[in-house]
Length: 113
Length: 115
Image (cartoon, chains in turn green, blue):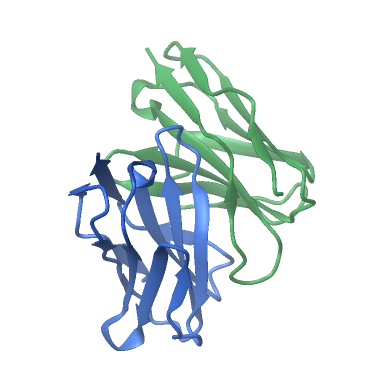
């Protein structure tokens, strides 16, 4: 079974803090993705990576950055957390073939006070 | 531009009822992929099905079935004899072949199945 894990299920941070969300997959997948989920908006793509040290902006990259130093690990960074970044963050991974299924982690609920 | 519409925000049924979740998509690509995911209260998205644009065969998996119709750009999901454990938010998603696996999600349909 594909396993995608995220470092925290719940996180509470203060405005202005630097926040790291970690994601690890164990299926040797080339592609990894970060989404945020908000009520009424579905899931929106923040960043994705198709290879180590490679990254591409998604639909809502503002206020975020990412890091992929190893194939199995993809980090989402909030340089200076703001209250409008309170959300559910979901990580996913997939193989490199077109149309392949993305497998998701359990999600991190982030609250920024 | 690709878009997925799930017009039903929330559906409530009683156990053993059949229920259909609607999904309408927009794409200019001729090769694309459609997905359904289930998100139970725990929060993790669980993959249910993947369909490519060249395969319009309907699919049945136990109590679940999917009806893909290119003529109406729809990919509807039916649960037969619903159960309380089916209560979740269900997402339909679209990926175009040239979009580097970027998934575009609908806003989801919350299904509540009561005993």
